[in-house]
Amino acid sequence: MAKRFFYIYFLLMAVPLDWKYYQQVFSINWTHLQYGDIFILAHYAPQFVAGPNSFYNWLFVAALAIIGAIVWTCVDKNKNRSRDQVDYLVRAIVRYRLSIAVIAYGLIKVFPLQAPYPSISNLNTAYGDFTRWKLFSLSLGIVPGYESFLGVVELIAGLLLLNRKSASVGAFFILLFTGNVAMSNWAYEGGELVYSFYLLSLALFVLSFDFQRLMNLLVWQRPTAPNQFKPTIATTWRLACKTLVIVFFVGLYGFKTATGETYQYPTTPGLQGLSGIYNVKVFRINHDTIAYSRYDPVRWQDVVFEKWNTISIRSNRPVIIDSNNTERVTAPENDRTYELEGAAGRHYYSYEPDTATHTLLLQNKNKHYRNERLLLHYTQPNDSTLVLQGMDANRDSIFVTLQRINKKYLLEEVAKQGRRKPIKL
Image: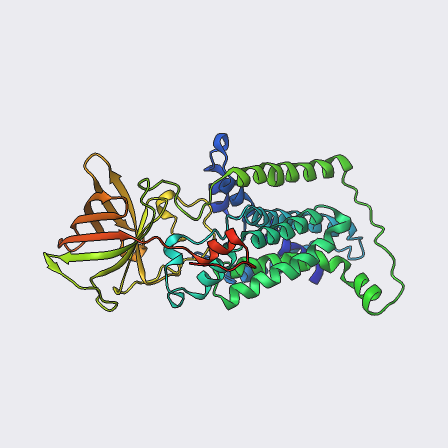
């Protein structure tokens, strides 16, 4: 009965039964498929309990599996019947499900999209203003080569799972790799803790079929017979399933990720030629000039214009941190908030420029400040100076003179000049 419980349990964990999953599938524009759409197909976890993904879903699945195992035992009286075919079928479903999931994550690392290079705002935010998760993500983003290497490891493990004879090797790699990911999510308060443990449970199930033989061979050093089982499912069907996964989830998905833009940052370009960090040289509010102070909650300290349509303002005004840190590969343009998630010290605004009237409409991107808007008129006396004036969210008049800082970043200089040469900033 225990074996039947695990059969049903892992089938329920691997086969999508949640209607919300199919709602997402049917909402995909299949004529204009993006890599985020394919990621949705691959990124499935059972969710029967409302709210964020949690281990309570596992308990619900376990309860269903117990009921199913009891019914199965009562109906099937022939307990000596061979379970080899059932073993093979369940394991095949689970290993294909696991393979698709790790390949989906692997390819957004191979073409470093999951943890992109830090934005200008992030590079100019104090270390102590980041949460643990954001520090972990930024640390991965500054070494895209290493991120790509991690993706290759996941990709190889996923491909090994597609072959019955190498599935245990792939599952073992996943236990090591995803086990480290799970511990990182736990230690750094990552948002994919439950999902990483979900993948670990699938890998353990796949490996369990060869575990006894591996223990006998490698630990106890006993004579061990190989698995002589031959599946009854036609080779044509097995080859067709394998080909479909490789063509769709490796070939097409790999092409889309290689040619796609990062899903973490907005893609709408900002005002041309303005990207960079600016010192706030003059700051007036209601015609009163406020001198520079690190502790003044009103005065701006510096302003960053990103390459895309984001402006960040550093001040001593408190920031309620947006703590979202889950994967949102298909987030709409206005909801791409990776740059501000897990970070304090700055307020981030998306902006809509009107080049005819030289005005900027700023909208705070933090979900805790959705009602905050600023309307500013801009002029550019020269290439290094920008003047902003208008109304803030409190309907106070503001006047700001910004001076561009020609700042060099150690990370970029090291990348250009190499680690063994002296560097001047």
